[in-house]
Image (tube, rainbow, N blue to C red):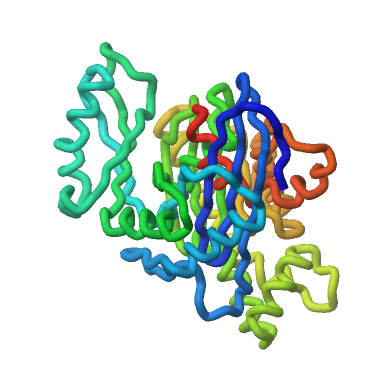
Amino acid sequence: MFFAKGKKQNSLGIDIGTKVIRAVEISENKGKITLENYGEVNLDVACKQFFRSFDRKNLNPAVNNIAIAIAGIIEETGIKTKKVVFSLPDFATFFTTFELPPMSKKEITNAIGFEARKYIPLPLSELVLDWQLMNKESLKQRNRVLVMAVPKIIVEQYKTIAEKAGLELVALEAEAMALKRAVIKESDPPTCLLEMGFQSTNINIVDEGFMKMSSSFDVAGKDLTYSLSETLNIPAGEAEMIKKGEGLTDSGDTKISHILIPILSIVSEKTKTLIKEFEIKEGKTVEKVILAGGTSMLPGVKDYFDKIFRQNESSNLVVEIAEPFKNIIYPSALDKKIKEINSNYAIALGEALRKFE
């Protein structure tokens, strides 16, 4: 579907997940961002072959499968843009932070490689480095830097995926950075981004537009599905449908929430721990938690986290579902659909927005 007309700059972001690939094409004209196309390929949870398989040390994208899926999305949606930004799961990226003496941005760039050797356990010759400041650049105060390192072999795999799909890869970016771009403004108060995908959960604290703390772990949507499957002795595909249909609402005879809550409590406890660490270290209060990813859209999940984070009566913490399309122009006929997919497409949209920063 092609929405906008006229001369404009287009940008394409693609979020390559474990079982879902999502693409968003947007355009920019005189500062206004318009949705041009979007689409996805979704594998059933019971399939044996996902788009990527991995452990904490390795990411093994199914190059041919991903390329075919992306080509299918492009053909189906009519996406015209050839230059693309791909998402990279946070667990496949080395994150480290350190401080540098007062210096200019050019001097910081030159110092990153030398300083990063002290913190990253792999030879820098095997890695591609990217970085961003965690405070406003200053020649008078020390600069805190967030450095991200990606193995070159992964970069080459994703370049191959792009080529096979008929695209040109212009950037690879960690999911957390795209999510931040899509849902956080620099003027926002200290905010916790809680992104729960199928394979992993990412928690990130953002303040003044900068990523201040980050944590990634393997407890996520898959664990909710597999717990239902094992407890109820049903196929994983059926468990996935029950999870998405009932969530924590307990509309059926079986108390589904009793099975799901112990897993969600692991996520909530890790989130509270990171928030506390930030507040102690920075002397600031996190005022908002934004939920993103497919798991956040399950019935009752937002209410669950709202209750958990408000157990302390003095807490003013607000829990919201991510609305990345809030400031994007699209036809009113899509209102209902955008509401359904809003949070799920946050990363893909964030990647597409990178061009217009």
